[in-house]
Length: 183
Image 1 (cartoon, rainbow, N blue to C red):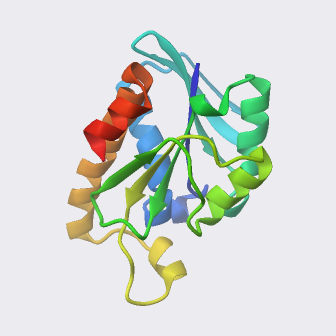
Image 2: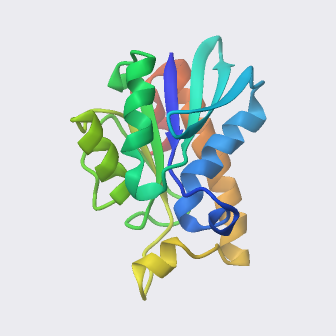
């Protein structure tokens, strides 16, 4: 079983913001595959589905970004998942819009949602998919909580689909194949 957690903030006011790219990728995966069951548990919306016969849980924490670990840790513990089978998808200002970076492990890079997860899990040793949103010229908080421009929306729609492709590759062929194909 694999667990894919998309990071974001709950609520309509955050729905189309740069910080919600993780949610958008998880939603794209749910659209592509038959959701067998959906539930609210562990401070998250969880969808159960299969990708290439593999059971996959998609999760969107409802704790707000900076407290994401409060939802992820009980999810991992309940399903007795190995952290190598956890993929966290999130926005990254240090990557150009449209680019992806998949890694098997690593630091939080200043991302508060990832800091929360690594703190709660007690490890940085889990896969992650960083989706580039670019660095602002002004305030970072306003940038990540701002909506994409019309021009950015076109690029991000393509990027979200590519990120979903990358996760499908990870599920089917492993982290090395996903990194070699999508980085």
